[in-house]
Each structure stands twice: as structure tokens, then as C-alpha cells.
Length: 147
Image 1: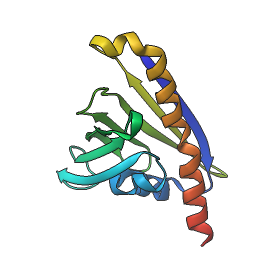
Image 2 (image 1 turned 120 degrees about the vertical axis):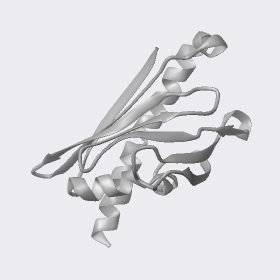
Image 3 (image 1 turned 120 degrees about the horizontal axis):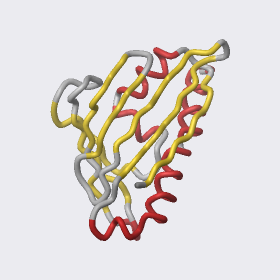
């Protein structure tokens, strides 16, 4: 199994961070590699919402990475699972309020099947890079507050 997590302190209140994260349409603002994203079913920002997403893969090839929100606790937690594509990780954003802002932890885990199971090192590296993009979220949200 591959697992990765990263956390940052964002100088914004928990509801502002949550509101930004729960809207899947905001992902391209801070996550690299998203080519196209759109809500395909359910209500935006709610449990059961499904987003169709295409990512840039190796050699620039498009990879499907549709995901479903599986848990949504306002101001505290958002969980999701990827439902299409070669790797189908699950993960979440976990928020906690602190005096200086909101601590956000982004965690991903994946149990690769078939040939992907043999490429665990590559998958681990990819997942670490994905969660590290949380630093970009911090920059986006803190710049937004300053503006």
C-alpha cells in the first residue's frame, strides 16, 4: 500500500479553507496537472458529488481521475475517493483551528492492484508530490486574503 501526507498552517479561518476545498472546481488553482474538471452528479460541495477530472499523465497523456466526495464535515474534514483511472487512491483534507489560522493535513492512500502493485515506489513518489502541493494551496488562500 502507498501512503503520503503533508500538512501546512494556513492563515485563514477553517470555514474559509473548507469552503475553498469543498468546491472541486477550485482544484486547478492549486493542483498542477489538472486538464479539465467538472461536476457530473450530485450537488457541488456535498457528500456524493462526483467530479469528472482529466489529469496530465506520463508523456503528457490524459488520464481519467474522476472522484467522489465521500465525507463532508463543514470546517473539519473532506474525504474523497478516485473512481476512475489506473490508480484509484482515497484521501482527505483534515482541518483544525489554531490561534494563527487553520492547520490542514492532506493524506492519500492507495492499494494498487495488478501491475500497478509492482510499481509501488513510483506510486509512492507520485503521491508524495501530490500532497506536497498543499503548499500551493497555502499561497493561493493567503494571497486571496491579502487582496
